[in-house]
Structures are given as structure tokens and as C-alpha cells.
Length: 228
Image 1 (tube, one colour):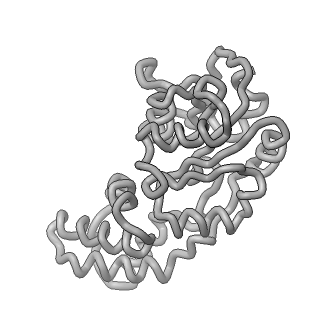
Image 2 (image 1 turned 30 degrees about the vertical axis):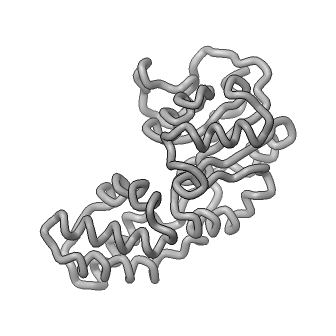
């Protein structure tokens, strides 16, 4: 934990995926099932899918469209027919239940405590329908006053606009708002660009140049709050 203190924190925004919730089956597991069902060698890796996700989320209206477009492009770039990628996307859609998610350990207790003292928001990148299904599946809206699905409501993280929208809507200031997330490239970079303090959830060290205000290993390590 870093040794900083912030006075008068009044609002906290959270990333969604892998920060507050997780799939009961990882995308990598589902992707392997899809290749097996179609009797295909792996056309692309889950890491390639992750790397291109935000790009396609910004221009696609639904999760099915996102995967179909993304998988087709990845297949073509790796020397396969686009249709092969679209076939994988169809099977993936049948296999993946976006509501089949769970809160990360200690998330409910943490949010119960924080919502008594702070205004809370979610800032998440992703397809609008998929993110809404996940949020509804674990009733996250009971704790949050605002939810920004970046890439649709605003440009995606790390653009500062989704963070600016939270600050303005909650009547806070960048100096009194903290963003918590697991991605250095989207969460921490975006929060920093918007002038927010940040907490990076990761066991990896961060460089001082691009680093967060605080770093904790797990969500459970947010108690006690690092800015106090």
C-alpha cells in the first residue's frame, strides 16, 4: 500500500469486470469449448480477443455483433476465412450466458460499507447489453448512484470523458473522487487523465511515471481504505 492521504473524498467509481465481478467460466474456457465443438484448431487466442475488445465495443451495438465482427477479423488476420470466426462467435453466444457472473469475494461487504459514506459509480467499457445483464445479475445497482458504460455513453476508457461525467453528475470534483480498477492501461490511465486519484488492484508493481495513487493486491485489501 502506498503512503498517501487524500482529504475530503466524497465519491468513488469502480471498474466492473474483474474488479467487482467475474465470470463463473472464463472467456478462455468458453473459447476452447467453441473450437472443440467446431472441430477447429484455435484460430486466435483469448489474449488477442481481449486486446481488440474495446475497439469493437466502441462501434458495435450488441455483444453478439461485437464478437461476430471481432472473431471474423481475428480469424482473417491469422490466415483463416472470416466465416470461420463468425461460426466461432455463434457457438460462443450460445455457450456464454452474460448473467452467469458472481461478485468477487468481499465485494458485497465492501460496497455495503462504502455506500454508507460515499457516492458510488461504475465506469465500465463494453457492449451495453452485456454490461447491463451482468449488473442486473448481481443487483449491483442497489449500491450505485450512476453507471457509465463507456464506449456507448462516452468514449471508452482511458478517455477521461467517462470519469468527467461521473464527477459532474455526482456533484464532486476530480480531487475528491477516487477510481478503483484492475487495468493500468484503461482504469488508471483514464482516471489520471481526468485528474482523479486512483487505486490499482494488482499484485504487479507499477512504474512511478504511469502509476496509480495507491496499489492494493486484492479487493479485500481496500479495508482499511488506503487514502486514510
